[in-house]
Length: 264
Image: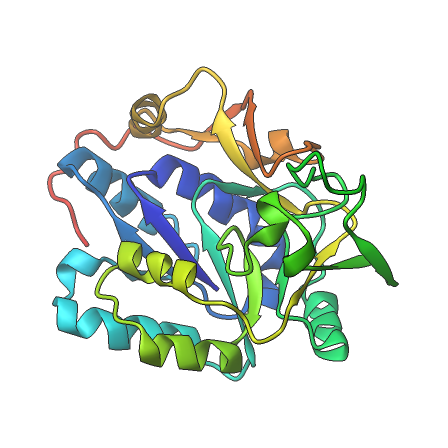
């Protein structure tokens, strides 16, 4: 799994914590992160100290000509034939069977498996039928990118999506990128060889905007030793992949404001 994070260490913490029950299934996890201020980088330093057993890559610490091979190595290392891309504002809201998702991907020859999508997500196009999903068994649904709109029409969505590594080799060779942002932008230029996507019946993850809390406020509470409790969002249902929701906090220790030195 490769997770992209920019200026949101508090939300990254919540996502990583929500992944805890699934770590045996995920293998190696790498976080590509950047912070635009000293305080934000201190927040990331604290999250690193929580021992989530993930790899950390900060592009600014890596010469631009080295970022590409380093990220490609993060994608293709390990024995798995698959990789998951995800973003830091996600939270897992249900049980996830990653092995079943990979099995379905191979059996159906689909392009990717989208954990943020499901029958609860509206296609955002009034001209489309009420349901764009076709059940294929085992609680899994399929659709064609050419026949839908909204979230279902994006074949390279990075909101926690499972891809075959083999399918990524050609676009990674043909497109240039030297940062996390430019890497994400290349997928707007690529159309998949396979035209169908897969998802479970209901979304397993969701992009969460904490109600009444800006990222600056979340960082302040992180410094005070309070973190978002992802369990408070478990079971959340929405018709969109993005939701503004109230969050609960959990005290995890003394504040980090007096750290003498930021460490990468």
